[in-house]
Length: 60
Ligand SMILES: [Zn+2]
Image 1: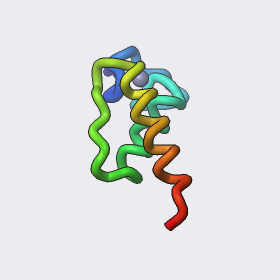
Image 2: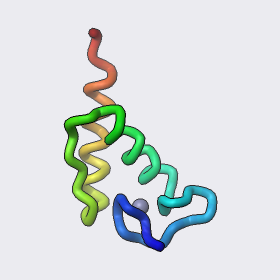
Image 3: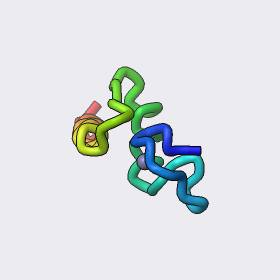
């Protein structure tokens, strides 16, 4: 099985992801709702995660 975020091998500690970062990306995707996170480019995923983090810090 490979990480659904970046496609790398899954790490037992973070199944079904390869790392905490990818788990965070997936979580942020759920929280962010409308964000589309590319599944094949870790740098894009990181950038998207940064955007989501910025968005989450906006006052409501
Ligand atoms: Zn990954």
